[in-house]
Image 1 (cartoon, helix red, strand yellow):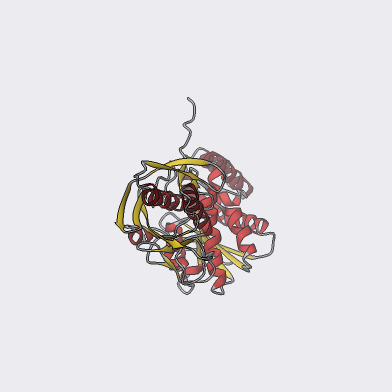
Image 2: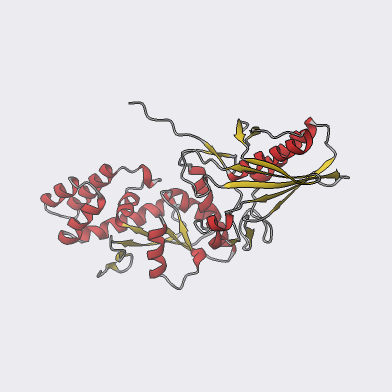
Length: 369
């Protein structure tokens, strides 16, 4: 059976650009567009449906677009992204398109992000798309000298921001208007690695030289319980992007990295998998079985590990019969991290068991759980 092609979506920034175009079409052409054409920063073009457009007074209109993330999981998928557009008189040499943030758009309060402190969290990519969309409609209607004020708003933005890392990054009061290209590609590596870079940039900007890498919220919560003296900015979720996280940490001048992961991820990292999502379970168990043999385990245990369905199942056999294999996994994981970090950062690590307790820590070995 042919593999289903995953559907590409569009970013909050692209939604805001489409809404801007819809509002200006209403003001300058006296019509409600069902959809508008938007050019992404890749040069690709797409028509985006308009959800609502209405007048709010002379020269002023509100337009909304429903964000469609395609087949990529996204907390903003289905959210209304709106703009209030005011079409003013001649720009008189000033910027023709002025962009601001309204309800549900966060404000940057910490250094280290692309947007300066005190400004609405609308990145440069969305700003370029909003401006281009506005200028296209102005030129088409011989209104090149008019000034356009665009206020971006997200009715549910503050609520949605609670499901993101915005607060830790210093973006308060709503979501960020994001998108480096305007497109959301399914399981976008670009989007996740950009979030890693942003987290490390903020951590560096507040003066940190040590970061704790986790692979998700659960492992992060465990790491925060284990290391309560570290500030929230020190904890960075790298997901599956093992190599990228370490290379990015180098770029931002970090000196020490702590890996805080569950056993299954530790096994994949120990195999030097640049992206742990790509390290299939079967291959992980083959490696773990081999390490059992290298550790002097009975062949029976190695065969049992090889026949397990998951790393979780294998963990319980290993911890009961040959716990020294856990040491081997931890040490290999650290060596892999040192390799991806070009040997220029100190690396330590902790492995959590499936009850969320630390079972191994570098420098201390196996721990009682």
